[in-house]
Image 1 (cartoon, each protein chain N blue to C red):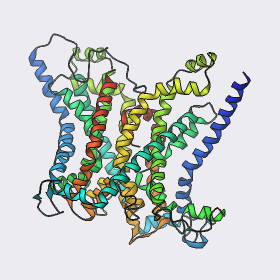
Image 2 (cartoon, chains in turn purple, green):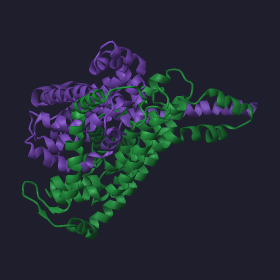
Image 3 (cartoon, rainbow over the protein chains, first blue to last red):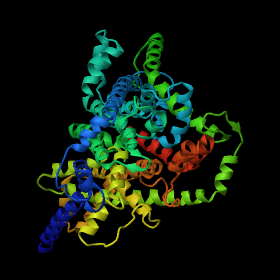
Image 4 (spheres, rainbow over the protein chains, first blue to last red):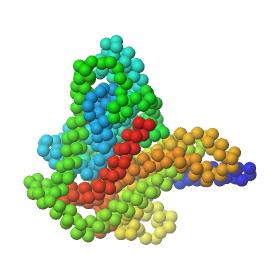
Length: 280
Length: 319
């Protein structure tokens, strides 16, 4: 018995130590990002560079708002991420309902196609997608970017909702159908209210994926009026010179929306996780 | 899968394939109406799949068989792009790098992610708070992660050199990203930092689904901690291990953002990997056809993974 308590104690303290190491490894980069954003240039570069800001200032943030199109980029990101989320929710619910409840030829193939589509990597698609968008004259438009994002959010959302809708008891819906409710009425009044956790995951997933996306945005857009924050950030590099202060300020602010959404939704997110909801 | 909150609603009567729906008397007109409604409400999803994934996918294959520059009409040249690639030294270098990059990153993410999950599964005050903190990197946009780390690695003013010199650990500046011996390791470290939470989240969910009474019973039988881990924990997490690794392998191998921001493939191609080479070829050198060929060259490996994963995901749902 003695050895068991000793092993227990060892595990407990070993665990605490490991936790401390993991916390440092995880948090130091966040610290550095934030610390840089509140330093004066003198403390950022060269021999006087500091590890801890001596005289914190919000100057970088001021420059960000006054001298750069930062606000415009954030606005574009918001419009694009929110539209992608709403479209994924609406079209995803409709598609999932059809696949979960209605009988028609081709169901099996479409269900399979959804996963397959979701797993095809972006790095394979961005080159031809550039050609497709040029053909449709959608290069450098918000609409084009939203469509491109639906290419990966919609298949996944439909797939996730399909699984959830199936778990809603059929009897409830049948009762409504017998009472003269239409299929779509049953979807809106019975299935959707019972699927709120799944809808939360879908909303979370679409929003963060669209907000964080970079490759498509970089390839498909280039003007200030359309650019999202992820691609706008890289414009603070001029001729290989980095303006680290404002850039880290922008990084802090651009990270806030997905992080806040994560904090609010984390309860549900874990559920959608093992289904491949989250890229890592 | 353990986490899928999906009680089976009506046994095995409804399958993904849609064979075996419960038989109820219905007239065929009603069925036809049902099918029509199904196609109508599926239209947006189908359009997206067809035009934004299927068509681009096949046109990538066709593009790779052409000599095509951005803004100019293409000319069909058969397999010449591929032939040129195989003769290229950079290609061999890139192939090797891509394998090292993917395997090492996935392995490290797995090990650290498992450690993270095991630590968070212990009983401790404020554990929820620690979990939230440790999973934070996962919510940060990848470009921002990469930019921030580029700044951490900065030769003159970055955190690492600054820290090492202030505490007299080293005397000279270390060129993290431009030293050919260090660059790949530094890039992988960033990939691991960003990707570990995903593993930890999946594993932790699996761990929490294992009943504590199993461990108690094993302990009464005299099983050591190591034995408990090997014979209870590992077998129960097996499915989650496999799915997580497969998903992550696809995403790790195809993510070009880390390399693009950190090193652009340098120094002297030491960190060049396929997705970034494709990007540079198609948009830097403006050779769309060749770029498509580069992006397709590692697709056969991925397609095997994708097919296996598709099967797994369908099967797990049916179970």
